[in-house]
Amino acid sequence: MAEGNSTRRVGIVAALAAAACSIAYDVAQIFEWLGMLGSAGGPRNTSTPFGITVLLVPSLLLGPAHMAMIAALHRIVADSHKVYGLIALAFATAYATLTGLVYFVQITFVAPRLAAGEMASIELLRFVPYQSFLFAIDLYGYSLMCASALFAGLALGHSADTRLARRLLIVTGLLIPALALQMQFPWLIWIGAIWAFTYPAAALALVRVFRILPPNC
Image (cartoon, rainbow, N blue to C red):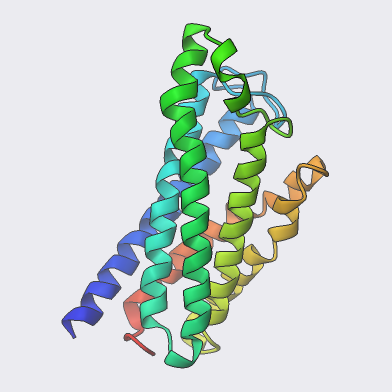
């Protein structure tokens, strides 16, 4: 029972953190596209050092929150669905590792040098939409996150108590092509933007799942 309660607590806290971080990112991204964080605005322009920090701090925190949420979900699902939960956790770990590396480098290495005007030493590491190596890594990372969401949805099974969370996770998972192919087709960002609604909603729906379902439901 104590182990079940620990799993439930971790799941609830992680899902709330994932929802909060994703919503914070969504709001910051809207401000960025409107040019309110110092950039020229729109999805194709580079961020200022201030914009990088505001955008990427919640994104950096989202990776561990998502990974912990999926780990807790893997613990509570039925034994017959645990393989899906384990696959979801593997994708979550890869996502958190790749995007965490990108965001940590941007916040701690790139942003201070941009602020100081030291451009020569960071050209390869600049986060330029659709034109940079790290932007491609970021898109791949979020493709893995969507794969994690897809398998997490499959892991939840078909009970009435999990229906909303399952559907939101699966819809998030179906966004994989809109992220993976964005370097070649930038207009897919407008389809990928559906993530801004489905992911935080899925995380909040999982809060209820963690509250009502016993381990190995």
